[in-house]
Length: 116
Ligand SMILES: [Zn+2]
Image 1 (cartoon, rainbow, N blue to C red):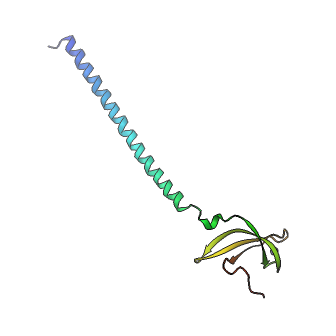
Image 2 (cartoon, helix red, strand yellow; image 1 turned 45 degrees about the vertical axis):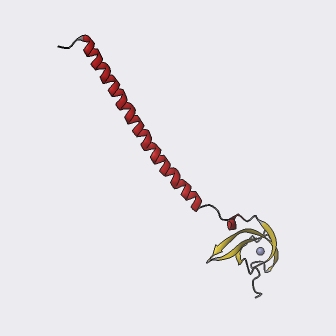
Image 3 (cartoon, rainbow, N blue to C red; image 1 turned 90 degrees about the vertical axis):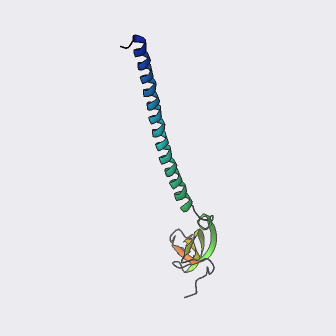
């Protein structure tokens, strides 16, 4: 035979156990979410590092005189960027003539094309 006091104590112990179990499950859920978040953050960091623009692609735009293949004259040309093609640097130029605006590549180390 159990007394009223013993019943109350047993109920209180049950409540504390349930609360402890609820907190344990909450911590496990938060730990799982944190692990997933860290993995995603790490993957994003690696992605950003892999796709970070190199120094070659951040060359500021510059105006220079170049022989435009379309106009076949010396024109002010804007250096848009320098890119690597097959391991050698190439300048991407844009003709400054508003009627032309040709985009073309020249070897950065040999900017002049041979006269035709
Ligand atoms: Zn041109």
